[in-house]
Amino acid sequence: MNQNNGRFAGPFVMLFSAAIFGFFGFSRDWSAPFPDGKVVLFMVVLGWTLKISAVLFLVSGVVSFVKPIVGHLLYALTGVAAAGLFVVVVVMDVTDTVHMVMPYGWAVLLFFAVWNGYGSWLSLRSILGSREHVGDLGGGPEAAGGQ
Image (cartoon, rainbow, N blue to C red):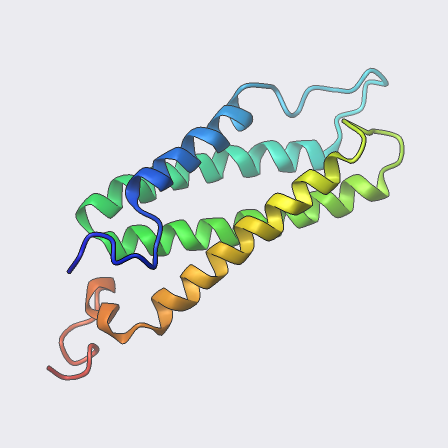
């Protein structure tokens, strides 16, 4: 099978995503209290989403060198989950009028959620809809069409 057939992100894109998410996730303490002494749940959720996504993107990049379709599947699933959690964080941020991190920061996060979520969703649909890769996901020859 071709390492990257043009429909999916390559391993280096996955590693770049890991670096970006890792930089923002690990570069600050997302659970640090605000000046009023409160730890804000949406900030904690955002921090852990970035950290866990960074690790999973790194794993998917490494795995895709050996088992490309498995790496792509993990990358797409992680992207969809991260996008969903970004939307949750946006809703929590917009409804919390006291703890504003940056004005309109929710709009930037929503943009990334839609952008990454859409790309990940298309990749996931393409992977799961492609019968040629069923055997690469662990199914035998009969799962790939009996050939």
